[in-house]
Amino acid sequence: MTTPSSAFIGASWLALIAGALTYMIGLWNASMALNEKGYYFVILMYGLFAAISLQKSVRDRSEGITVTTMYFGLCWLSVLLGILLLLVGLWNAQLAPSEKGFYGMAFLLSLFAAVTVQKNVRDLASIPNR
Image (cartoon, rainbow, N blue to C red):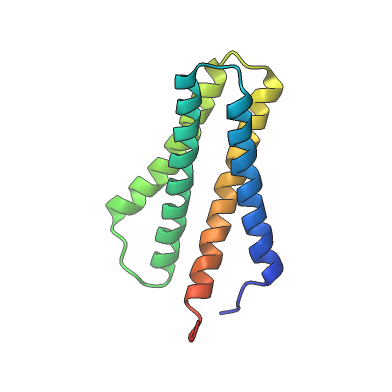
């Protein structure tokens, strides 16, 4: 196994911070009710957790570590449910199309980046004497 480069590690963290932070700044500045802001914030947190959990489960299975089919299925369901909940929320939101696109892209960037950060953390943790 090769070690992830410093550039890849930095780019992964930068993408995660950029995606999640811009999403949250957008929520902070949005002119929506606090309960709506809470809904979108919880979807981001749920999506990040689900994506990381799915990545870990996929990696565990590929390395021969036992992951139950039920947990693996719940991980997939959670990722898809997080995306679906965001789509339903944005579809029904009283936001401009550009705002909807902003939230959708920041959300997907955050999920992708969370997976790459988790991969890098796991790769670095598996290096002996680290």
